[in-house]
Length: 326
Ligand code: UFG
Image (cartoon, rainbow, N blue to C red):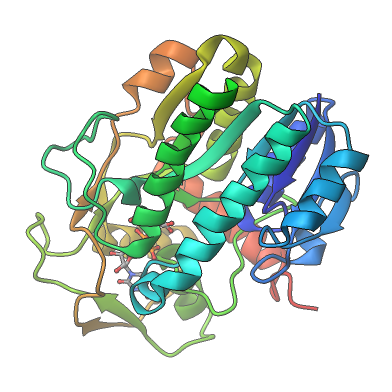
């Protein structure tokens, strides 16, 4: 297939592109490079620098590239920024997404695999979280992703769009080639690495008074390669699926303290931690039920163990001491 991957210069987009190319697909890698990195774009992909708010640019792109499907990962994605600047999120994730849908439909492209998030659920009432759980986002990021999932349903009614939403829990890990690198970094595992490497003296632990076994937040870490594989499975079956949403997680929760301990073990290094206040917009516990994607698409994580996930991330970090920084 010929596929447009939006957000192809981002962490997950780079790995999705890598696996799609390995499967023999032809990739148009789209990114505005606001958060992504040019060097994270696979060399065999055709790179197009474009912002999803450029509706005319998108129309021109679809007019010149005759594609079979879109994998849409481009987004604003930092929870705490979304609380301070919700408009940024609604413009990028909703308006930008609508521009993409309009260009797709105008050019007869009706297959969309969408990068969604556990943040659509908010503070869950049941753990593990099934896909039909109540959705009450506690940040504008989750709200914007949920809104776009719902918008796609109307494009199905109007235009027969086939859409699969993959609700990622906490993406982590790396391939040999591509890994997690944000500037500034806000995600737990790369921050613990920075502390382990002495690039920062200490790291802050956001909240130790949550209603969890050790008082720190609990998350479900899923390897970025397993996430990427889910996109491939979804693309294979999208014509039969019509419209579907799937959680992507391993079903095991690890507390922030457990993650820090696992990084100490994997790296063999010291990590200095200071207690800090809770970070606004954080749910206490997010653990996925991924039964649906296992049963319906045959998804089976290849790297479910936290230590293995951290080992792959650590290998990439050591091989790329400056990440993607030029
Ligand atoms: N944390 C710290 N110190 C840090 C960084 C993070 O204690 O320096 C904590 C956070 O407060 C949270 C946990 O580590 O409790 C994980 O935080 P991350 O920022 O790594 O990940 P999130 O769970 O906030 O975010 C992830 C995805 C989002 C998604 C969200 C669902 O990155 O895209 O899960 O809520 F929306």
